Amino acid sequence: MKNILFSVIIVSYKNLKVLINCIDSIYQYNEIEDKLEIIVVDNSPEDNIYRYIKVNYPGVRILKSNNRGFGAANNLGANIAKGKYLLFLNPDTLLIEPIFKFAIEQFEKDDKLALFGVKMLDENLKRNTSFAFLDKKGFFAVLFTKLLNKADFFLESKMYIVGAAMFIRKNVFFEVGMFDENLFLYREEADLARRIKAYNYKIKYFKNKRLIHLGGKSSTDLSSTSKLSEQLKSTKYYCQKYGIDYNKMILKEIRYLKFKRFVYKMINQHKCDEIEIYINFLKESMQ
Image 1 (cartoon, one colour):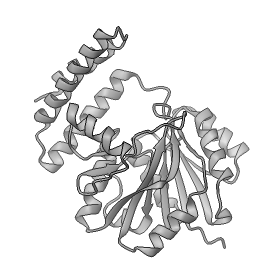
Image 2: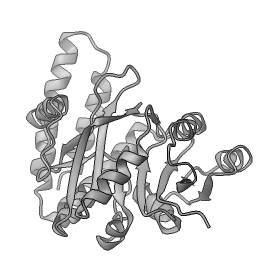
Image 3: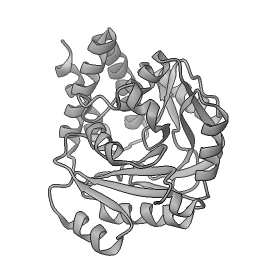
């Protein structure tokens, strides 16, 4: 029987092309061979991804889900995972170097390390967001997030690792209660980070390992309005769960978006209508 050490869990939704590229990159840089397994949880309403993976990637374990959200799908994958360690990976990511031996070494030398992230790059190999503030919103939060990411300075007590690639110890993931399935699309990583810290485990960031995160390619079929609606539902639930002033958080975001809209108008960017829709959604969501 194979001794699986790492289970890579990928949640897909109508994104076969990027999913294939992601899987191929895992195989290309898999330096632990049969100690690794890949699990795909397909949230798509159609069966084309499921059928394609079954036929063309027989080594990949694929499950069909009825799309109860990002967290619920990852929980489904974790429940069948054989690995001691998990990597929750977005389909719009690409491995560009071996990473699994490094991950195992980090977990094995520190039994209090529960979760970590690595440096995220965009498709041009320029800096992408690897971590963000748990609860802060608005202009200064965005500015400091960019500056701290550029400086590779992760504030464990105030930040979380972005969900595009999260390496986590499986027994801790189950111990802290897995992903909260009330969060359909947003705040899952921040919520998980809060619970990990509450159990006195560590979260780290390693700048010497890199992944590409294309961003915005995980799903090709979520309208902007429906996506915003789900994000705001999740944010409101998260705020209620942790006693955070939702209206105050949203007001900061509105101020930031108004500033962003002003800048776009000054430089004749054609994104003002999109920002206006978001601002109106935010206003309507306030209690």
